[in-house]
Length: 240
Image 1: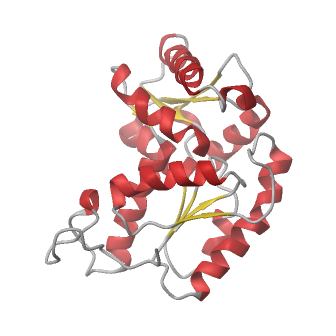
Image 2 (image 1 turned 60 degrees about the vertical axis):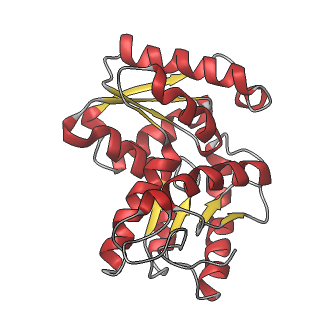
């Protein structure tokens, strides 16, 4: 299950569609019951934690949830879920930053939320990646405006990615935000350095963790099927 910690159902649908490209049709997206439509400051990030926990408990109680992806770049609720979930739990920031930094690569973050810049830096430090972090670059326009203008969002994020590379020396750039997932997907072909889209990175990580968690789960993550199953059959079953 992919939990969207903000209350935008459109964002949930977008992130779920991207997740299904990696994991197949067995991904279910869930929107938290209460909170802001966008998480743009530390207070909103903290307030989303109990909502993420509540959504996860409901999913786990149904007995058909094999793993949890928290679809916000601040990873709200990830630590709390790991304390009780009993299934793999992955956050966008930890997955994307670890992927970008693999092999000692220096990486930056491009995003739209200036009020979360310090929180993102702290999260990266907590992940043990501060020595590879070149810093954050922000779009010129506010997140609220860019959420309504997809083309402007892509172009301003591209400028921020370029600044990470040219000014800061980053050799990989993470797009910092769940609601930026579609734009992140579109930017990957525009640069010579890796541009890490957070939702696919989280899906790749949870695929590996699911395979470790359940030895019966193995090949076929890209198509939503595992070896020995027929075409189109999911690797693990979730409710529609």
